[in-house]
Length: 299
Image 1 (cartoon, rainbow, N blue to C red):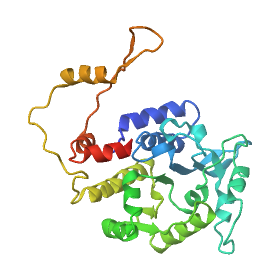
Image 2 (image 1 turned 45 degrees about the horizontal axis):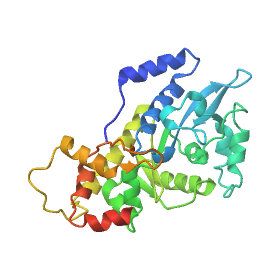
Image 3 (image 1 turned 180 degrees about the vertical axis):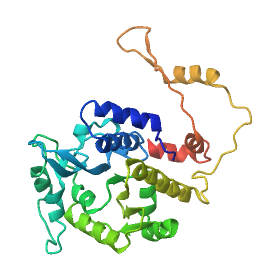
């Protein structure tokens, strides 16, 4: 993966939001959230969330420490500041007190502690963001990370790959229990660059939006490299002719073969519009010796 951060674009976003009364922290958070959200390899189907701990005025104009965290259902690719509702940080921190080992209904409590009562509900992982001490926290369900942690020995693979740079959190359903366990894992080794959530995803963090974002890119890139190591073709390659007919020759034949007579109009045909696509994965599939077998199974 490559970082999408561009200094001029980041500053332009900060300046644009400043004109709307949005602070620098939240503006930078929106900018990097969009960078994450526009890459489907990180947030397939809109998954993932981000946050920033900052100071904003409440409805009475008094400055309050808050956690601005992605609201449930918000699309990170096009998110605006309103999509990161502010939750009072002191109220969230109370849930981490040692004697509070189990909490029910934390989502409802987070919603009640919103600075704007009409704001969207905060993410189900709000407490996890709150329990981590860093100013900026990023969370994605990156394909490459899931491809590693979904394996039977996924935790061992990640421990070997990251060599102390990341800590692994055992699988727990999202909610208070996961937030508490992640905080405990982090506290045991607070110098890590992020957390791998087994069979779930990855968290990275930093003192700036850029640091948290570029750590995400760097650590996911390591996972991508691990997946490519000693990788062999999925399908056995067939012996193809040296000279393959050009698209201009093949397309009319395919279009004619796929055409069907129009039963309502005598002499008319229903013809398709074709879209030609290719790439290494597609060529690996269509060039397989057993394509007749697995293409029928796929349909």
